Length: 223
Image 1 (cartoon, one colour):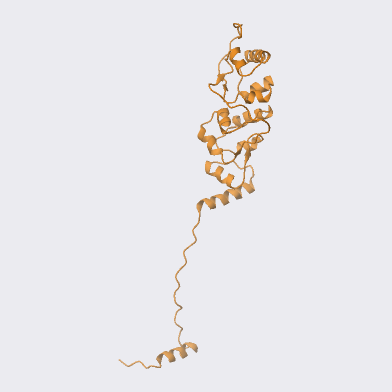
Image 2: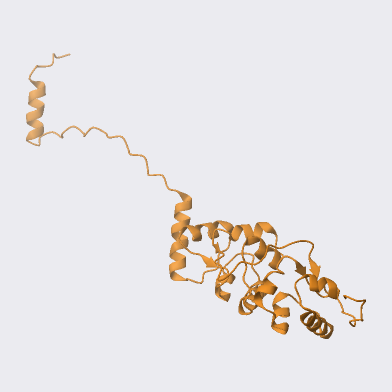
């Protein structure tokens, strides 16, 4: 085998410079790792885009509720509209109707417990809404609810007076109840127009049983 000449490297450079032979390939560089993508960040960006395109978008899951809250959206419970309520997952049209009728009667809710008891929903459903809910109070807060809950469609006059009803208002309630049982607090307030703060204090204290209501019989003294 012929011995390699010491000028061969120099000759190779000259030949490469003059284009007579191809230059050596560039040294390989290690590929950079692809940037990591946060799936939740992508979902939030997508939800933000949907909300910009449709401000009345209905939220489908607790995750979307939490993401909407992180984007700055809030629901003022005591000033919410029908469209506001209908955006919450798990809230049915009759729930929104009840809330709006109470709001129209001047009734306010002071916390998640009030809302959960009023709508008679599982606590976990209301807990899913909490990141969005704001309970702004427009006046003095109501008294704390107490147990047990009194069935206003069957309660005696003495029990009704224990709720803070004057004898005159108690008789009005009994007469109206004999005409037709009350469906809920909103129905009662629409028919009797009691002071809002009085009815607010009954949230969590009362319920409305179903079934026919018999005539109001005269009771003993104090009934």
